[in-house]
Length: 314
Image (tube, rainbow, N blue to C red):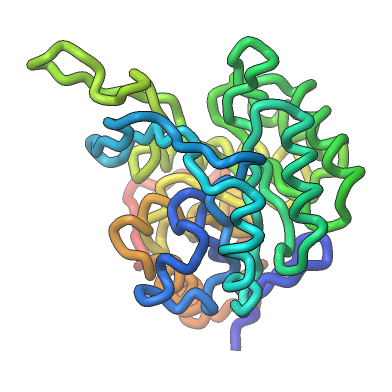
């Protein structure tokens, strides 16, 4: 038997594969397509204080090796989530992490307070890569001081796992990771999407209504791996690796460079059961390699050893 579980701030995850926010809805949408109880956890679609319609179309476009999205954090709002989605989530045998998005620090606090008053949410992932209306439209996550301030304010409001989702659109992600660790974050999710765009050459206009959007999918995996590796060398708290994980081999790479666990995102649009398939694959890899605990893979990379060929295990 292979031990697949891990813990963050006392919360036990049955395996090291979660589904990423915005790619799995609120869990109920995929009930007939995937055995959600076999996932390590579900990170919900982002929640804001009030419902958001999001951006006008076009807001999703396929790109070579990836996908651009500019959904605009469309969601039902935290109060509707509590009444319409949380009752179902309480019935699941997996960890539920609520992703929170906001346009001000106070809004982050209000949303978390609403959720703290309810049963069924095991922890929080804080999206600090959304527009900061009060600070001139910049992302919180590009400013380590603001990100630290958010962490400090939220840490005082909950004892549940507090996970900060970091943007890769910075010079040194380790600086931001250290800042949130110092303020009491229990873990970090690395990375959020990269900034990208697509152009229609016939109209000479951007394809997305917002001109730029978030790039995800296999194209960003090398960047995500490097950011996880950088972060793992800078902090001691767990890292949830995200970015282009499409199969077991991809997930194993993230674990080896230092991720404690992974989140599967874009792959869910192709196969909603990708997360459970990858979780099974990790366990099977460990069985074949004689590894008794998946945790032994975390940070096991031999960074000094170069290779001339790529060996893929699926």
